[in-house]
Structures are given as C-alpha cells and as structure tokens.
Length: 629
Image (tube, rainbow, N blue to C red; front, side):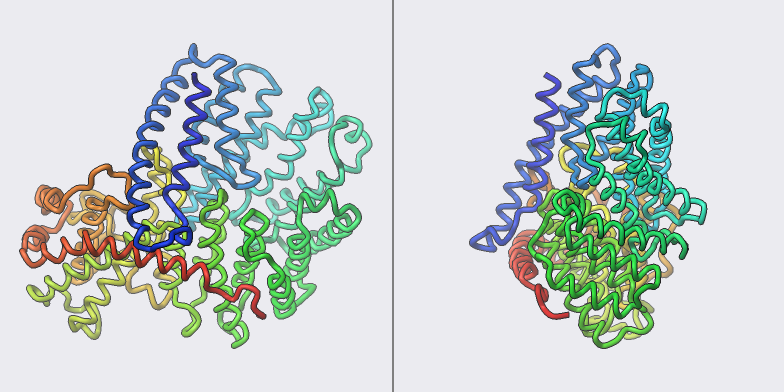
C-alpha cells in the first residue's frame, strides 16, 4: 500500500511539472493558451489534493516506529531514488526528500548496519548538494546554503572513514566501495559557492589527488574488482577540472590552479587514449572547454585568446540539445564568458558578442524549460542575472529579467504584467485625487512619468522569484518551513539584483517592500520601511495590485474557483490600517476604478495570456544560434 501511494505521488509531481508549463509552440492558436492553462491548473488542483493526503499518510508513518518495518524502509528508499538524481541535477521534490533523508539516516545509524549507513550517507550527500545548489543561487542569503553545506560535509566526514585502507577492505560489497570512491569525488562540490581560504583549497584538491593515487595503488586495486579504473580516473579529473568554475569563484591560489591545468592535460591524454569510456564521463566538447578554462585561469592564455577559443567551440554546439551536457555548453560557456569580461573596458566586439549570447540564452531556456533539469538551468541563469552587464543598445536588464521569467514560468510573468497594469490603473486615479502623494518620486514628476514608473515597478516587483522558481512550482502540497524561508527571500533578492543595474535600481525598494504590511506589523522582510510618502504610496499600490491579481486569477493558479473583486475589497476593508493603506478602500469602491479593474481582470488577463503565448513563440526563435561571434 505504501509503495503504491508513493509511486502515485511521484507520477503526480511529474505531471504537475508538465501541466504548469505547457509549450506554447505546440498550440495552433495562441488564444487557446489561457484556456489550456486554466484547464491544466484545475487538474493540478485535483492532483495537489491527492498528494496532500499521501504526504499526511507518510508523515503519520514516519512518526510511528512500529509502522516502519524493513519493507516500508525499502519502499521509502525507492521513493527517494525516484524523487532525485543529484548527479544529473534532476529532482522532483528535494525539500520533501531532505526531510525523509534525515529520518532514514537517523534510523540507519541506530541499526548499526554499516551497509545501510553508507547508502543513507550517500543519499544525504546528494540531497545536501541539491539543496545547496538551490539555496546557493540566493547570494543575498548565503546563510541558507551554509546549512546544507555543513550537513553534507558532516555526512562525508562520517563516510570518509571507510576510504581508509583497513576500513575499505572490511567492506564485502563492491557496490559500497564504488559508492565511497564516488563520494570522495562528489563531496568536493559541497564547497561550491564558498569563500574558501588556502587551507580549504588545499584540502579539497588533496581529496581529489588521493583519488588519482588510489587508482595507481595496487593494494586498493586488489580490494575492488567491479570497477573501471579509467572511468574512475576520468571522473576524478573532471572534479579537478571544475574546481576553478565560475571564474575561480572559490579563489584557488595560483599554485593549485597550475596543478589543475596540468591535471586537465592528463585528462585530455586519458580521454584520447580511451574515448569510448571517457566520453561517457565527459563529452568531447566539455572536455576541450575545461582544458581551455584551466589554461586561462592559471595564466597560460590571455583573455582574448580564451574568448576566441571558447566562442569558436560554442559555435559548434548543438543549440537544441537540452540534456545536461547540452546545457553545459549552451549556458555555462556564455556565463563564463560574461564573468571573465573586464566590466570597465568592454570592446565593441565584446558588446556584439554579448548581444548575441544573451539572445541565445533566452532562446535556449525557452526550449529547455520543460526539461527535467530545471535546477541546472536556474543555477546558470541566476549567475547570469547576478553578473549581467548592461550596455545601451545591447539588452536592458529589465528585458533580460522579464524574458527569463516568461521562458521559465509564464504564469509568474503574466502576474507581473497584471500587477503592472493594475497598479498603473490605481495610480492614475490616485494622481487625479492627490497628485501631491507622488511629489519627489521623479525629477520629472508629471502624470505620464509617474504612471510609467509605477508600471515598471509593478512589472519587476517579483523578479526575485526567478531564483526560486522550482520552489514556487512545488504544487501539490503545502510548503515546508524551509521552502517558505526560500520563498520569503524573493523581495530582498529581487531588490538586490535590481539595485545592481543602473536602469532598474529605482524600482529596487518597491520589490524589497511589497510584502511588508502598511503599518509594518506583518509581512516580510521585517523591520524595513519606505523612505518617503511617494515611494510608500507606490509600494502600497503595487502591494494592492499584487494581492488583487493573486486572489482573482483562475488561469495560472490552482484555485478551483477564483475569488471575486468583492471578496478582495472585503479583505482590504478588514485589513485597512494594518495590512493595507486605509485610502485603498475608497479607491477600490470608486465606480470608475471598479469598471477598469473588472476589464483588466477579465478581458485584460485573457489578452495577456494570449500575448504571452505569441511572445514565447517569438522568444524561442530569437538568437544568433550558429552565428559567427
């Protein structure tokens, strides 16, 4: 019974992922898009309810020791395997898996069964890295990632004792020995995104160096028969080669970078000597890129040579390969190009390249967004946005943000448009009534400029959600405490990226404060307030528009029946003076305002979904593709 229920949960989650992001290019008529989404979310609602019952049953089982015998533990193990493949960064529900993994690890440790413990430690390391990848995107909240880094490193510390020769020899199962060797490599990625000191850099490299020595140690070779040592060597070289990723984000010193470069040359020799085996670990194009990146990071080639070489390789890519390896060349390589630019001295040629790379990225993620590796896409996209270089005539940061949102999660993109339109509508009426409320907002504070500002502030208010889209797409159950913590980061994360670009920094505080209550007594982030009346007014209008659209949207949400405007106005009345600004009650009850809002929420929303469908199809066709860069 438990197995059947868990299998149904996995099927439901997979179906929900597909239903929430249908491919617009599959439609014969863009006007069908809104109807399709509405129908899909009705199905999602039913699947969500079913999954809620399954999770309640699972929670009850986990809290009852007598209900969790060996058969149930095996069922949970199989369930975990289906929810996550961390080596492929393919995950369906990592937060739930994180909770189950901690419980299974506790039970495994209590049994005294070494084999069971090693297998659970293996899963713990995988899930911690997956959660580290998710939380690591949130550069404004590094403490969230540190929780999973510590938990994963603790698991590796417990497993690493079995890598010592005597303990390794005591294991009778080659599968366990392979698992330990694999994690000796994999554990090093738990330092991804960390600001490492020299000692940590040396220790990380030493772990991988030991992996190479094990392959040449006759005593170890005798202890395990079921292993392809060339594959082990190649995988170890791969983890060495990725140490300086993200433009050497972890700050490996020059002497270690030199060792990494020499190791990548050995990696290339091994690859050429045994291509059939080695290409299963690292495809040819990625192997060649890793060698050139190591050469650049240790100073063997200069920036211009590096750019020419990487873009020559990029031009040979398959721009329609959406598997993991395709994402490496189509997303990682452009990301590394941007990171390695001299931001203060960008040539005309580099600007040309940037324009085409940004277009390529948007086209690629539109086509790849329905793949199973959404977390992998988001890992690169978040870095691309955080390191975005805005150059007049190339691409604005606003365009990059909203197009990324459109490609990754159309419903949230349309929500941004709706909030922008509703907030602009409300601001127009407020300007007629009390124009002084907007004094000081802009140097050119006429009505047109004010409404334009409000529109763009509304459009960008949720940009921080790009970093947690896979958490937002967790339909089918209530959010865990950790997931809610992730969701609550989006105002500050969005504000920080908007603030980092000259053309969007004026909207940063609206993004930061749109979930803070009128009187500051609730919402998030706590303890922050607007700087003046004009800014506060815009934030209050955007917050109102945000709530109104969310409450009444029956297309891009799982509500079986949408709430009415009257329902929302009643909510505003009840919260006037605490959650909502008191003047909003009179504004929302104005007959002319009500008429415009009814249009926006009915015909306007439908038109926005139709226009989004057409835009997405166009987005999928843009980019230089195989153009000469």
